[in-house]
Length: 143
Length: 275
View 1 (cartoon, chains in turn purple, yellow):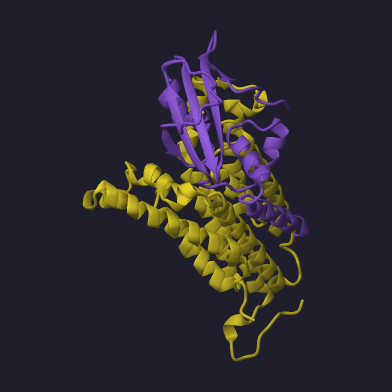
View 2 (cartoon, helix red, strand yellow):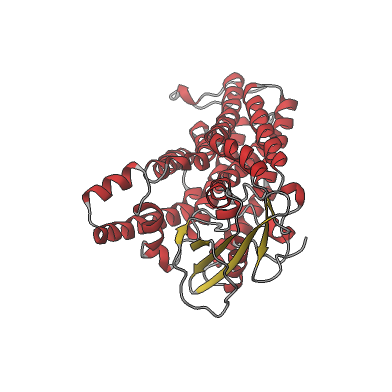
């Protein structure tokens, strides 16, 4: 029981510090965008509950977009509750946007207490089957 | 084996070995039942995932290949349902332990798989599985009343943590203003509350309602996240069940998949003997 309580208290402290420690909010923003430095570090955060966290916007386009890190205009997309990359990864979004087998560009933006992160994805039809997901904002991290 | 008993004035609190066993086994089954309902409520996800991840694979170097595979989702989900179902039915301790561990491993996989990582259903189910693993390890403890008190405390801690996780991510201007819920729920969500509100109020009035709805959510999650764990078991159980059920009833029935496991955990508090 002590181990479980310790884990709960550790996560609770993490959550309570998130509004005042920018590094924690940044880590969570990167977690939401699948841009954590490594998959292992990302996966270790899965017990941290994040129901309806942050202001997450997304926009799916059929026309090519490029990474524009200097762009400060808020994204004019719809809101989504959490983990906005789900628009391509989760079943309903995959069906909605990728079932025709054509290129699609997804831009997601998450904001929290003055910090924000914008990420661009390109779902490119693979040579044989399905799609390859490319990030236009840098490396997706290594394992 | 000695029984734990209260003075004669309150017969309902007398615990014989038989009803002690029933209470702990019942508590175990309540939580397993909650997890099973959570997974059954998620059946539509599984049906969609079963076809979609084969039909439209999405190769992403961020995830290991086996955590992008449709087969992994199928195996993890179906195995979890089978393990939880068997755990609910059996009273053999060894089998309960194996089923609890199996379900915990399956939930861990679903929490980090490309197809399901974003779904809080599997996170709440994972926490319920952690509780179940601990509880099964103690099912044969001689002092069952003490076990139920500790189990209830652990369940309250877990529920508080889940709610705190929801609250802390909403401590931001976009939730205080209602902007997020206005777009996700009030704009066009097909749900009785929002359909009814849209039929009676103008868009600018809806924005004001969304703001107060959002503030209500932020405040309730914050208060419950910070304080639920400290309440007496039965009061906490009743409050948690009402609160968790109201979240789904007033916003989205699909959220029951996230909440059934937590409602099962909360119910354990009702089994703690009065002392």
